[in-house]
Image 1 (cartoon, one colour):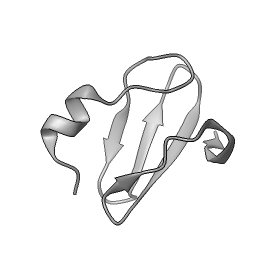
Image 2 (spheres, rainbow, N blue to C red):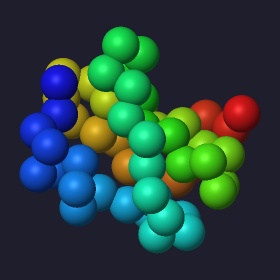
Image 3 (cartoon, helix red, strand yellow):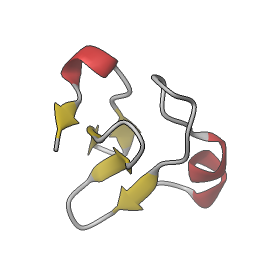
Length: 54
């Protein structure tokens, strides 16, 4: 589970918008860009090229 302080400063690397954290799925989602970033071992992968679209 990601620390709240980290969640407070994380932003989508593409649009700089807010992210929604889903601890059950281990993802950070940007609704504006429609991208899902994976979180593995409590480390967010914020690479745009590796994000999934929805």
